Length: 431
Image 1: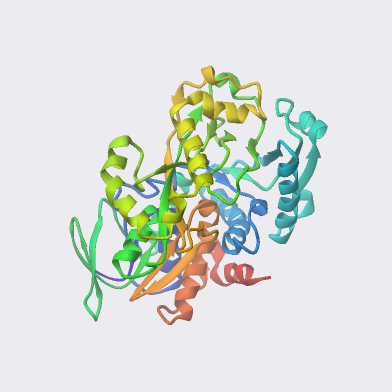
Image 2: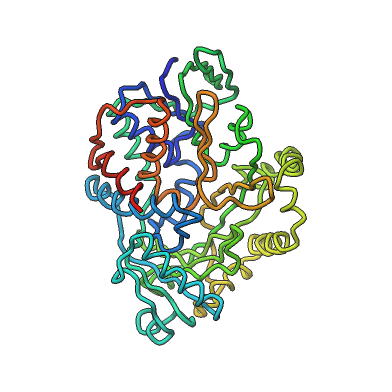
């Protein structure tokens, strides 16, 4: 098979890239996915939230913040067009101490810088929170109306069908096993045949670093995988709160999130996610992690991640996350800090776990923003995690524009279904 552009990975970002490329170029676009369907992993194994951009530092996480800000409107428009669930319910971000309250004050500033209007964010004291959500106990909170609950798996599947209507092709159950530069083209050997392509976009999520390394790119970076787990609440808690409740993370410099109280678009309530270090992008179970443990440890010890392995604070937090994985009480009790009415014994079923990857640089620090690396006939998207689903549509346009500026593609059309390529770019480039 031959293609002009081959996208590896049909998560929500890879599918968004296929959608926009099939609209704005006349290139033959092919999307490869080793799973049996699109959005099989992280893209559908998440909180299902279209996040408000007040959580993201407009300097350190500029790309994520800008993409999330526009992503809300784009997904809302798409949901209306396709009759997909889009529950605009808002979110409550709570602080439990003075340190958390100072963080909330910073969030207010970030939200304004990222384009949120003042009437979309309300700073509440404990009594005001009690009037709005009687079961929530906290010191202060931000209530943001610009937050929604959706099913990103359904969004991605619908987007795939639209991309196919525009000429993109999708190969599922197709795993990229070896990529070779044949000078005139790149050759991708898969489990079901060989593909010749002029350019590869690596949007493989948890496998993206491995693919980049195999192609000689981003050798100074590595990643650590984290499994996010959930517990489903008993139906007696269905009306405990109207909105999802997040607590300010105690250690924002690390990718460990204090579990949230999540109200999904269909009314189901869950506690999660934690962030348990694992050794595989598919590390949902013990067997997979043991299999990948030796090679992952060797990779980490030969990179900047080695410093993380000997960081006492990281190890302490990782131990705490592991405890929340093996002990339901430990995980539910975190949420009881602000929602004391929940009782661990009322949680009987685990939710669907997902695995995300966080990139570490050569100095042993977590990279805060998304990373785009250019290789030989290739574009590699690394560290694309939360709020990745929220910002997938505008971020895909951003990646395509980077390719256009490098002469890899030409833009033939700007109309992209309900969106305009130029308008999206204008927003992303605005100060």
